Image (tube, rainbow, N blue to C red; front, side):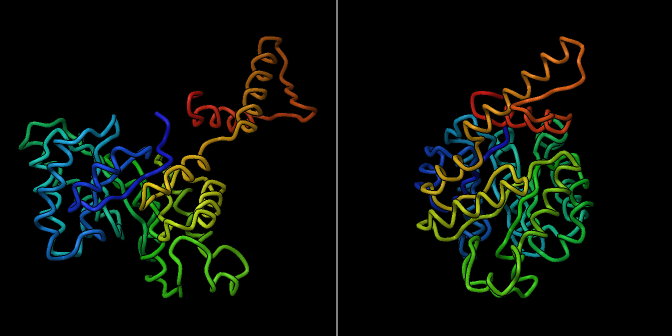
Amino acid sequence: MVAARSLLAVPASNRKMVEKALASEADAVFVDLEDAVAPGRKAGAREDVVGALRELDWGGRPTLFRVNALDTRWFYRDVIEVAEEAGGALDAVLIPKVNRPEDLHAVAVLLDGVEMNAGLDPGKVKLEAQVETAEGLTKVDAIARSTDRLQALHFGPGDFAASLGMPQTSLGTRDEWDGAYPGHRFGYVMQRIVVAARAAGLRAVDGPVADHRDEEGLRAACRVARAIGFDGKWCIHPAQVPVVNEVFSPTEGEISWAKKVVGAYEEANAAGSGAVSVDGQMVDAASIRMAQRTLDTAPGHG
């Protein structure tokens, strides 16, 4: 399966917004109980999540919702109530502010009990983890290998900046403080997350751009994330989906190059030759792997 390019976040407490999200062109959608729901509505919004999981058409997408962080009073009931009531309709849970591998182990134990009680296959409900604190980054490799349920790592730029005390005036795009640092301020953390994810066989998803009207800023942020190796990016508004899908899809030029490389490799193999050349350039094994990945991730080609 091709990794999702766009992941659209939607408040659990707003049914119309959930329906609109599921009708969008987003590759994936998650229903949010954390930042998008006010404290006084969080407990009641669990039923909204269950309703969305069980009653709405997800268009073939895996069903996913985000719980509140482990250090809140809502967390454990978010997991248990939604997972029990949704039953087989729930595919995955997104865990924010994961600081250590034990955090995901705790969630996995809760899900073990829910699955046994509901007669679901062990490990049926998968996990996705947000790395968005200094502690989480220092333990990202262990987090990535903490449980077989885990299938993706996500970067949370807003909370990460707060964790480090980084001044920030624009979430997800360059702001007045970027000029004070000779490089991309999040380059290191983004690369660390991608490396940890790839080493553990996981997907890597970049965080959102807060201003859904800033198409130029979104496009630039997408290009940086894709250049580093992320599979896709969060969207907080359906209007962001087309740009994200476009940037995280291989261009026609990339696809053409990949087809040439793979074709030349197959011809060389058939002729018993170890040397491969494309447009006058020697192609090595790494180039062939990159070309095949391009074809695997191109819509309609994988």
